[in-house]
Image 1 (cartoon, helix red, strand yellow):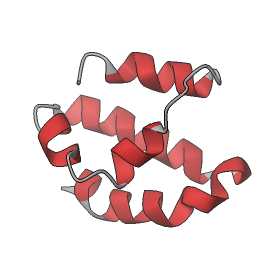
Image 2: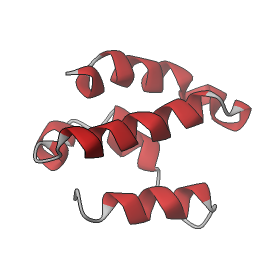
Image 3: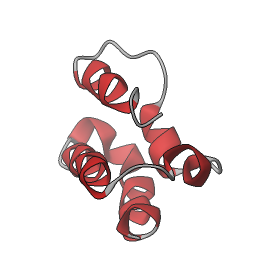
Length: 76
C-alpha cells in the first residue's frame, strides 16, 4: 500500500478517485495492517494530506474522524 497510496492521494486531490480514501486513512480497522511498513517520510505525507482535508470545507463532515486519526494512529 505504501507504494500505491501516493497515486490514490493524487487521484483524490484531482477528484478522480471513486473510493473513500479518508475512510481508509482514518476509520478503517485495517489501517494498522495496511500502513505498518510506512517510513517517517511517508507518514508525514499522509499527515499533510489529512491536514489539507481539515482545511477544506467540503470535508467538514469528516473533520472529527480526521482529527482523531491525526491525534491517534498517525501521531504514533
